[in-house]
Length: 336
Ligand code: NAI
Image (cartoon, rainbow, N blue to C red; front, side, top):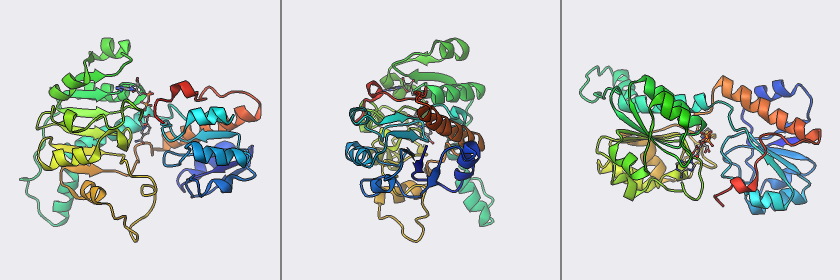
């Protein structure tokens, strides 16, 4: 199937090419899918996109006009695709739902420990031959209460890792995972109680109408002063300014995030010579108790291999007139 791979990055191309073995005709372009770049799909039956691509209704209309029939996401999240519009336009959409929950969960815990044990500050200081410890005191994880908002594939792995550290785990999710309750002693509580009682809070929910800015001032005000908030979900799951304010005013102790609500067009690019004029981003990058990574939680060898496998398999299914089991249906959309 002739496929245009939008937002393709040098580190993922070898995995996709290797998995494809010349079966489909793939064209890799670095451009994001937007209303301005949709025309590049002229002559392609399928396109592949990532989290920063825009597959809103307008863009889908254009893709349809240009003859595109299939969209395969190289991501688990699909908040950037208007599935209702895709259905109306008869464009089939599939994602890569479980390429490596471990990759993301392990990165979430890396963020936690980097923030807690002040690793970036430690490196900065030691590079200046300052070997003092006054600024580097963290806390033990054992015995702490961890709150996990969203215990799906990624959240479940976070539960297991934090169990290993000897933490007590609280969780909030409309779907209560019995295995986690039985095997990991997870206690499901409402989000208010979770915010009030947790020392560490992980966000691992999809972005939808219920989770959009679900962590705002009202929730931050419930949290303990020592709380560390870790976000590997999507930037807009938090109200960024409220979170920044709560760290600056010591309402919470710190924020570590792999995602940013205004990351589109910034993350995944070298913007060192063309720095964005974005005050909130500047604070996220420079505050000692805030840590930001550029949406890299998925970036492991294993995850890239699995994303490539699912992407090529999705295309193969469509080519053979079958529906991939990763097909997304509009009833799953709650954010438009
Ligand atoms: P999943 O679908 O397996 O789990 C999501 C869980 O969140 C489900 O159990 C669902 O019931 C729950 N949930 C939905 N609404 C909720 C609410 N209002 N409150 C509490 N829980 C709620 O998804 P998975 O694979 O665990 O991924 C979660 C999200 O992580 C993705 O949608 C994506 O946005 C993000 N992600 C980020 C990556 C990164 O590189 N930073 C990589 C992969 C995913």
